[in-house]
Length: 355
Length: 90
Image 1 (cartoon, chains in turn yellow, blue):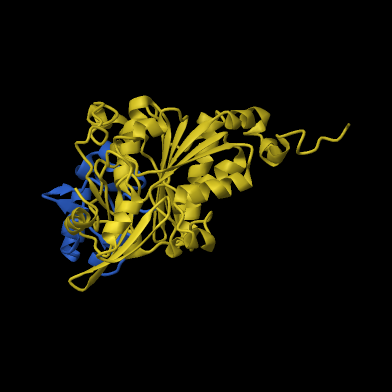
Image 2: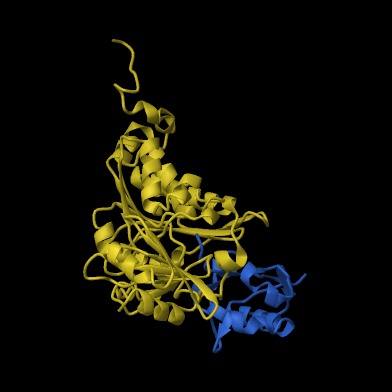
């Protein structure tokens, strides 16, 4: 028995990665023993999940609130047409693909909206938090929880041909609020809906994020990029700007200097979220018990068409000539398509789903 | 040679479609005043009640003005002033 087959040596699959001097066998073993929470599994998130699972990160929790739609397939690399046809939640569809790619690591899908009530539970056992989200509400929440508990995290953003990334090592580098004091209002900066997005933009940004993750998890903190990366793949610009002196913003950063976790404490954040790239609003409502879809479907059939599986219920209804599509999740959360107005969405939710 | 202000994509429509605008001034404040004089629609994109909007960062030759002299940071011909807002999507 001189041969070492893949079955007898589980590290063989990582041989090219281990041959890279910065990683080595020691780095690989750290990856295998590490735990990551991936917040959001859309364009950035699927690229991140793909790299991490192939690299052998030992435990990956994938959290996403959404389900796979046809317009995702242009850039969300883990999904295909069958996921759309099956109406699968992104976290579940991603987990299935990830297990096919690497069955030797643990993948935990969580179909949930990340908010201040669950983010500490979702990240408590993680060594690193990765931003695969598409909105600043989640990013400021991640920033709060990461600074509060001293966990590293990697921000990434992508719109059109523009991308941005920054690595946050609490206590060592500026936090997100040191650099960007407040979230932009919807409409003040581009969104996927107004500006569109090219797949290479998200692939490149997420690949930078993934590289930072590999450095951190393999114990190569000295290699971490401590500058703000900004790039434009269409205009051929790629620059790193110095942000290190902003750390703590002369003692005035509410988050990392004053340790006021305003997003986590609920001083910021709302019950409704306008979704990037779609004429839709998410209404968050924590139901005391999981919804009974059989019962809800029976009620809603009087007003419109209803279909459901164990993950979600779809309901189409017309009001004053405007068509709306509800996607309701068992935890009471709903995405209402056909409006970008939070108030109208709240009203529609109250009218059909309740509360 | 003038001072170059790089205008980010979400603000270009308000800047006549330009990615870069040549301005004059001795400080960042003067340079931005000249920018807004040329393209008044940029006023509300950049400022909120006289203060720079909190998600727009201003860099002079890749250095953030918040650790230089803020809006009083000196600029001269040949310098690049980059306006860099947070990038949302993903």
